[in-house]
Image (cartoon, rainbow, N blue to C red):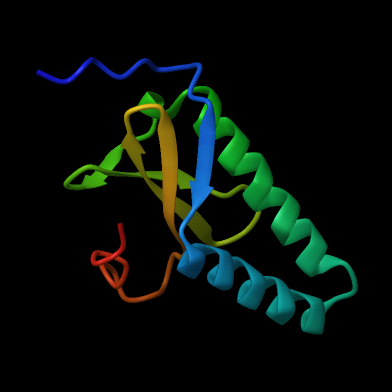
Length: 106
């Protein structure tokens, strides 16, 4: 039997490479819209990831074992899985993007 997950104290936060690419692409888009907006987007993603790391179990499950944290001030969410002592961010998804495109990511 697996050890139960704790709601806090997770030591590792891992971004899937595609989630990193999504963040960079969105930041580039926002930088093209307004000076420093991309930087603010990246900061908002980092803040959301930090919140997830502190207490991942407060976020709702959206499908299977994937949970969602909405990013403040931007129409994006962080989709993540809990894997024992780590949080794996599988997507940084625009809220109007086709749902489920990220399902094959581990």
